[in-house]
Length: 250
Ligand code: SAM
Image (cartoon, rainbow, N blue to C red; front, side, top):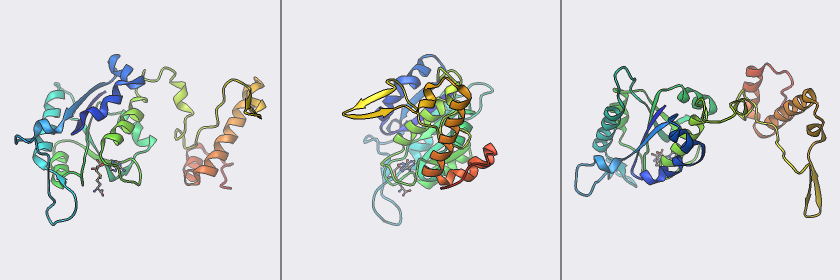
């Protein structure tokens, strides 16, 4: 997968060099380039923002640098027969980012991200881009960040770990929270008995039994219970996906 990110703070994306994502880049599974929006400004101050028409607080990102930056991304990444990128614009007014959307994005060959700052990007940039490539505005959640970079870090990480070969043990992806609708069961490791400053905390005995069917049943019950307790909004969808009849909100 190719990924291009446009930002006025390219250094904000440095964590994409670390851990599994960094390794995926070095292994050639993820071809990721970060572009500085200011390189596409046309004045000597490299201005990318201006005051909003109609008045109001804050600044708005100007359209011309964005048009030039997106044209550069498309030209730099295009190959004969290759598609145009799918442009993701992070924004609190977008569609919610979910595991289902992460899977959809992971199916794309090429993603581009436009990181807004200030009060956001001039609305005409969305029209301009949509005439050239698919565009999706994606929200990380119902709150407001200072810029799109944090959202890009989250989205790229969630998408890249779904690419074949990025996570070593692909089976570990299957039972994770939000795969199939339920949250994951609680997990434990050694020691089986932990003396926590005078309080003894034990691992549930069934996990030490070696009885795989019982462990599976316990984990399933834990997933159902945890989902109902923490995310009752997920229960109807999970029941549809899994056909479970024991999903009850308590
Ligand atoms: N004035 C905008 C509004 O009310 O919708 C918010 C602008 S915000 C201060 C600046 C940038 O942060 C946005 O353009 C977007 O790139 C990013 N951002 C803020 N909240 C976000 C969220 N919940 N999800 C994704 N991106 C977000």
